[in-house]
Image 1 (cartoon, rainbow, N blue to C red):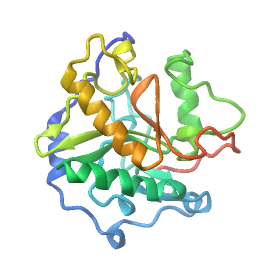
Image 2: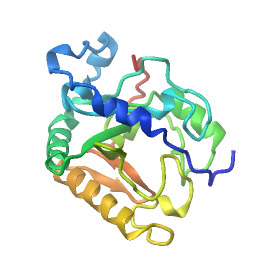
Image 3: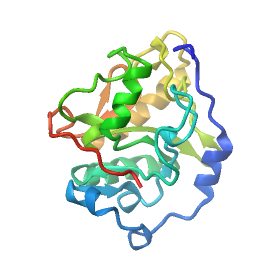
Length: 218
């Protein structure tokens, strides 16, 4: 697969997610004992109207094949809960919802990704520790409204300069404004955008090297 290939989003997937009634915290199934032991929560218990579209549970990613099992859940570290609630509230005021493309990522999946694209500019090199997605402290997100995904200028896993958070060449003014709105909402929740990917946001402690975490995502 060419690294510049743009992943096309099937809007029906997102529209269907938007049509579903949000779950209450009590309706969200409990996470596994292993996930709970490392402080993970299901993002739906934090953001009830979140649209979950985990791309690594599908073939709509740069690998071109599922890396997560069917039924994979968006798990995040509990330290992100308050910030995600804040960010979701900000975008909700504008009639939009947060769409989660990736959350916690097992270390074994990170290894598999790097084997496909061994370029640290696009895929973090696995090390003898976990951080960022591997500790549930980073998320890949975008916005959706009642009609589907909001135009951000690229899709997910677009390995081109247009994916840079501050890109202007090849990115329309409307898409830049949409990116800025997403970034402002996430920053209100204490998240920081990764300069190389407009969709990637790091929560507090994302850069800290921690023992390897490799718990089930279901």
